[in-house]
Amino acid sequence: MKKDKLKIGIYELTGCAGCALLILDCENELVDIFQAADIQSFLMAKSDNIDGELDIALVEGSVSTEKDIEELMDIRKRAEIVVAIGLCSMVGGIQGRFCDEKEWKENFKKVYGDIEMTHTKPVQSKPIDAYIKVDYYLPGCPIGKEQFLNFFTRMLRGNPPERYPQPVCVECKYNENDCLLKKGILCLGPLTSGGCGAICINHNLPCVGCWGPVEGGNWISEYYLLKEKGFDDELIKNKMANFSGTKIAEVSEQLRK
Amino acid sequence: MKIVKLKKENLFPFLESLSKEADLWAPVQKYENKHSFQLIKDFSQIDLKYTRTILPPKKLFLPPTFNMFLATEQGYEEDFSHVTKKILFGIHPCDIHGLLILDRFFQHVFDDPYYSKARQNTLILGHSCWPDENCMCKSTNTHIIEEGYDLFFSELETAYLVWIGSSEGDDCIRIKPGIFDEDITDEDIQIYIKWHNERDKAFQVDINFIAMPDLMELKYENPLWEKLGDACLACGSCSNVCPTCNCYNVLDKPLLNKYASEIGRCWDACTLESYSEVAGGENFREKRAQRLKLWYTHKLQAYISKYGKPACVGCGRCASTCPVDINVQTVAKALEGKDMDTFWNRLSKEVTK
Ligand code: SF4
Ligand code: SF4
Ligand code: SF4
Ligand code: SF4
Ligand code: SF4
Image (cartoon, rainbow over all chains, first blue to last red; front, side, top):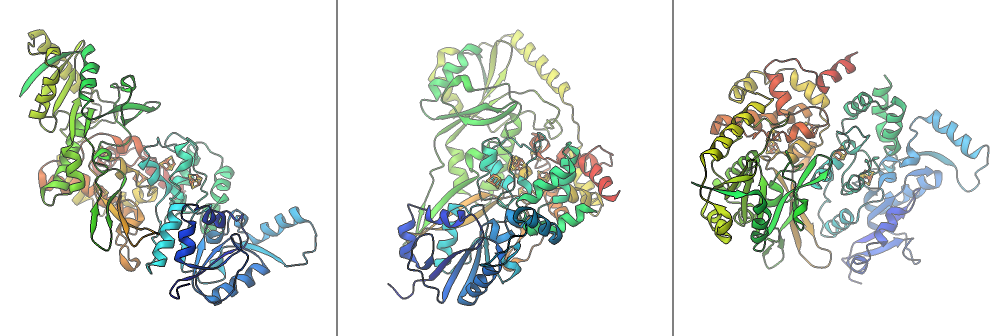
C-alpha cells in the first residue's frame, strides 16, 4: 500500500446504518474507493478494523448513549478531520426530535418503563457537534451518492468539500415540478437541505424534510403561511420538528410565544 | 417581411416534415393547467391553448445543470452535448423578448459559447396567445414581437397568418410550399385586426414600468423591503422561473478513477442565501430583504435605466410561482403606494399581534 494514501475511518453511532450502507451501495465505485484511500475502519464492510490515527473520520448517527459519547471522544482524538454524515449526526436525527429534556424523560419512561440498562446508560439524543468540534457536514437521510462521491474525491485531493446551502425548492424547479405549497399542500421544501433531487415532489409527494434543516430557512413565514392555508398548529409544528432534531429549538421558542 | 397563410389542418403535417431535420419542442400539459416545453414524439401532446410554461425557454439553451468541460492534466475537453438541432414551436411573444434579453447578457460583450451554440442551432417558431390575470406583457410592451423569430403563427379562426422573420424561416416554408397561401384576403386582415384589438382589451394588469427606476430609488430604504424579507422563503424559485434571470454557479466535480474534473454549471438565484457568499464565508447580502432589493433592482431599475425597457417581459411566472405573493406585479403596486391584500402584509400583522 502506498504511504501517502489518506487513512479513513467510517463509524456508526445511533442511527439506522443507512448512511454507511449508502457508501457500500456505491457499487460501481467501491473498488475505486478502497483503492484511492486506506479505509482503516468500516464495520459494515470489513472485519479487520484498526482503531489508530486517522486523517478523516466519517461519523454516522447521533449520540444517544454514554458509550456513544466515549466512542465519539476517542474518534475526535484520533482523527485530523471529523465529518458528520447524515441527518442523525448533523442534527440528532428523528430520535433527537424532542429537544425538551423533560419531554424526553417522559417519553423515555413511556417506551422503556423502569428497565435497568446494564451495558450503557441512555442520554438524550444529540448531534455530534454537541460534544465535539465538527469540521464538515454532509446532509441527507441517508446521504446522497453524488454528494458523497464528490465530497470523498475532493477530500482525497486535499480540497475542502462543497457546502450545500440550497433548499429542496431549487432542484424541484430544475425538474419543472408544479409547486405543491402554492397549491395548498404542506411541503417543507423551502426549509429543507437540497441534494435529494426533490425526489418526493418529482413523484407528486410533498417534502417532509428528511434531509434536515437548510441554513437560513424562513420557518416563521412558512409556519404562518401553512396556518393561513388551514393547517392545524400542532400538525405544522410536528411536521417541522420531525427531521429537525435539536436544531430548531430556537424556532420552537419563537413559535411558542 | 413576408406574411403567408396556413390552413389549421396543415399545421401538424408542416411540423412533421420540419421535425425530420431537428428535435421538435413544444408546450405540453404537464399538470392540470400547468405546461412545459417538451420534446415532442407524439403530435397530439402539443397543447397550444397554454398560457405559460412552468420553466421558461431558457432551459433549452442553458439547461438547469450541465457539464461545460472535462479538465484533465493535458487540458480541456469541451462538452457541448446539450447543443442539438432543435425547433422550438409555440413560444409566445414575451418569451421571445426574454430570449432577446438573454442574447444581450450572453452575447453582446463576451460570447458564452454554451448559450450561443444552442441558440444558433434552434429555430424559433412563435405562436400568438391570450392573456390571463397574471400576464403583464402589455405593460412591458412585449406583447407583440417584431424580431427574434424565424416564423410567427397568429391564430385566426380557421387558419394561421404566418410571419416570416428570417431567411431560415423562409427555408422552412419552402419545405412544403404547396400548403402555404400567399393570397391574404381583406377578410383575413379584418379578422386579424379585430382579434388584436380584443386581445389588447383583455389585459387585466396595468403597471407603469417607466416610473419604476425612480420609485426604486425613492423607496430604497422603505420599510416595505423588510416586510418582503420577512415573508420571503428564500427558495430561489422566482429566479429559476424568470425568462430573463441569467445567473449561474460553476461546480467542480472531481472524478474518482482518474485525475480529472468535470466542470459543471447550474442555475443560481440571488434570492438564495448562498448567492452572495464569498471565500472565507463573508456574505454581502445576508438578509432576505437585501437580496430581494437586488432582484427588483434588476427587474425594475437597472435595465430600464440602461436600455429604456425593463428586464421583465411580463410573462407572469413569478406571480404564478412565488408561494408568498412576492412578484413583479405586487411589488410594483406596493412601490406605487397601493395597499394590497398580500401574504407579507398579513404576516406582518400576525407577527406583531
Ligand atoms: S413543491 Fe415544495 S420543494 Fe417544490 S418548489 Fe414547492 S415548496 Fe419547494
Ligand atoms: S422528504 Fe424532502 S428531503 Fe427527503 S427525500 Fe423527500 S424531497 Fe428530499
Ligand atoms: S441577479 Fe438575481 S434577478 Fe438578476 S439575473 Fe441574477 S438571479 Fe436574476
Ligand atoms: S419578473 Fe416575473 S413577470 Fe417579469 S419576466 Fe420575470 S418571471 Fe416574468
Ligand atoms: S420571492 Fe418568493 S419565489 Fe422568490 S425566493 Fe422569495 S419566496 Fe421564493
